[in-house]
Length: 415
Ligand code: NIG
Ligand code: FE
Image (cartoon, rainbow, N blue to C red; front, side):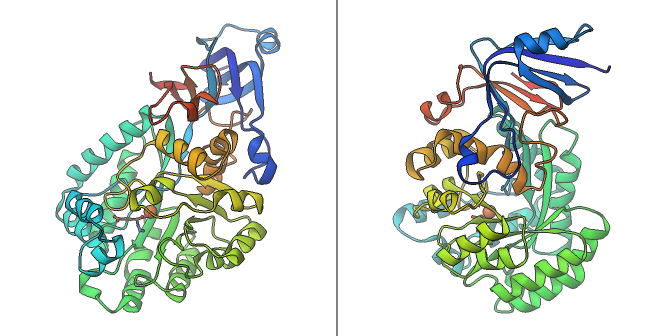
């Protein structure tokens, strides 16, 4: 037996166990064990159950014990959609939006993503890495044990690779596990203005092969949006990426209804994200094909847009995940407490559905539900402990974190 960790006496052990991703009523079933305990051996969960039973099943000594009496224990949160590697800031654009300009108006007059592209191209890899590391540290303190991160602020070969390398290097240098996504199709760069199709050709011919060869990304994502990349261009890119072994994600139906959700279902994408303006048909098709709908309420909040129809999606059988979309333009926050507040107060999700959406379904959104997202025997020991006895204290505490301890692969990494 290797290094062991025992967490015992948890007032509420939220396991989120069961088949994944969770859909419909199963999202409300958190698999709670009262007075629960977890045994971890060499970073892997080996026993889960009631404390009394589990203690009697343990034969040898354990290396470390945590008494979680009066506390709630849950799987670590998975933030399955972020853009955390970028240079520069766009605070002035935010002030323009407060004045009434829309996100797309700013983009159309040459601002938005391309501003961050300029600053990210100018930044050294070391500068980007230090900024990104700080952002990961803040996420960890909120209970995030796995994060997905996208490139897409380079839009040229060197800078896209630089962003992906930053994530590859940070993997293992700090506690948050990183799932990497290539999003070269995040905007049309100035040098390809009005030639989005040619830019897609460039990505397919010049960039994707390098990303694949160097195994720098597990997923490929695209901003499928009116005035950015069409459904046909998105399809072409994602099919080319898929031939090289990358799985698909889409920024779908965020600003207008374009058929992004339908495309996600057609391509059997792992997730379709945003979906503020998804059609009924898109919802039906995503439910049928079990594409994870990753909803990003902090972006809707920050853009003052209506929230995605999360209630309808869950009731229609779509597996729903929640994520932050942390980025320098539409949503400068990785706040899990804010997401929990918005999902419960404004999207009609129950506290239990919200937790399923941030754990097991978010793990499914990065195709890792077999390894993380729940507290079950055989899974990686990514666990958080709250300072209060029940998961109901999460939405009840508005905008502040009640995470007390964060455990990654069986080790306490933040407390
Ligand atoms: O998910 N919609 C496109 N991408 C980001 C925004 C990125 C940015 O504005 O820098 C999003 O909202
Ligand atoms: Fe995004």
